[in-house]
Length: 256
Image 1 (tube, rainbow, N blue to C red):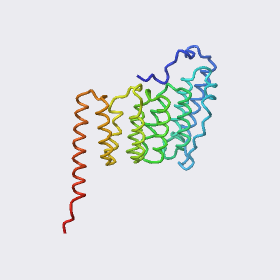
Image 2 (cartoon, rainbow, N blue to C red):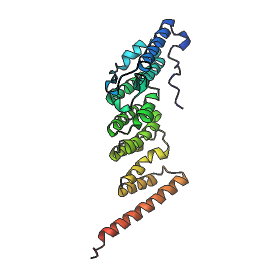
Image 3 (spheres, rainbow, N blue to C red):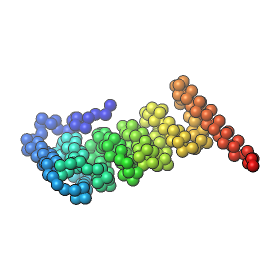
């Protein structure tokens, strides 16, 4: 189970021991951000204030005075509030997704145990109907996943779906699904996560590659669940039939 982003680690200073000055500073910074973004009216989207480039994670860590999790949480709130400026919400299309990606990765490095940056990339910013921006969020998830596949495999499965449905890029979806499939046995994944490669191959019409993958899975001895084995055998039978029909149609003489 992923721990909440605001939970304190043993190596960090408990919240109740934080200096009063730090609390006042954090609260004032957050209130200032809210005030400047929500209560100022009148600007058009063309004058939308761009996201500034983030500093490196070490700089934010130094400012946190030992409370990395709390500081990263507040910075993530600030990042999310960026699309609420001049008293209204604007389209995610107005956001600089390159800098947004930099922010998510910087805050992930600041607090490596947090699932929140990957969550935002997958469930919020990755749902935009813009293939290029969707790819940028996929890359954020891919990089976070590479740091800790065991913790972030669920976000990687969501990245496969984003690549397929939002970026409309099946080769990219296959790359991501293949990364899941190739994880070593030391990474505990459910079979359906590893089998996403089979689903994408099926979507791409790569019947022969899908057949080879199914054969490899069945011959590996790793498939012990009867229902999963039955599913794979059924899928193999259908693929073989589809290939047989295709070859038969391809070899049939033209009728004039």
